[in-house]
Length: 67
Image 1 (cartoon, rainbow, N blue to C red):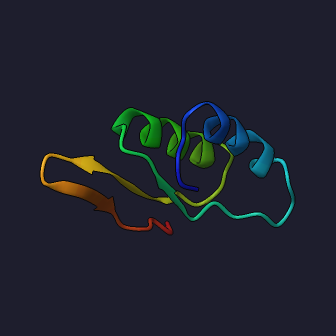
Image 2 (cartoon, rainbow, N blue to C red; image 1 turned 180 degrees about the vertical axis):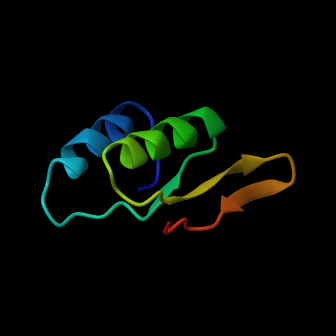
Image 3 (cartoon, rainbow, N blue to C red; image 1 turned 45 degrees about the vertical axis):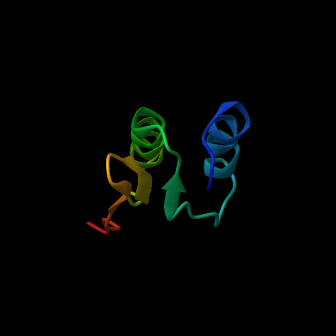
């Protein structure tokens, strides 16, 4: 998912309610939005998604966590 503002942030819950849908990556320039959305995914019992967010030197990437 790219963009976790009003519409994108609300879509997380809808996607998590759909069987078979996997959220594997999240992207937003605001770190708090990517962290909050990734927590929703993990709290739903799904694998943690990779996150892409704006850092001081460009976009920062967290690897996929498949624990």
